[in-house]
Length: 125
Image (cartoon, rainbow, N blue to C red; front, side, top):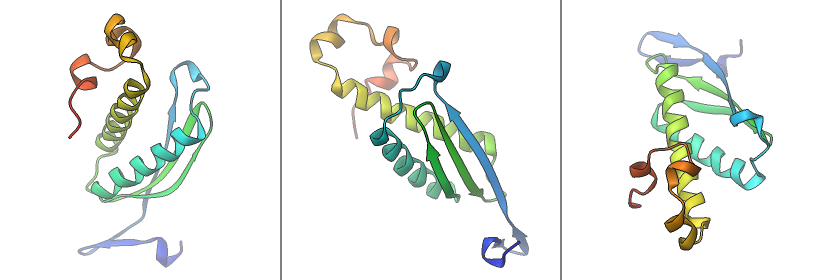
């Protein structure tokens, strides 16, 4: 292993890497290049908060691959849960902005999206 890939913390030396694949529901090809760019920037920002580093980010229309270098104190399940929650929330906000107000008044959002209504309509900070 190359020395530049090793991380240190206190008296420990570690190199923990996790490969994560996010797949769209039913593998529908719905991710565009713009969506992938937004997802990448959101993922990098979130991983910085979790003391992690995105080593690689690749995606296609129906899935996204992440290679993340992690700190030993970070639980993989907590990181994945946070990534899914934050990226889905931001994407749902973008979708709601694209809808005309006449449609959102007629169609109940819980029929369109997989997030709770109070989360989707929370005011932007």
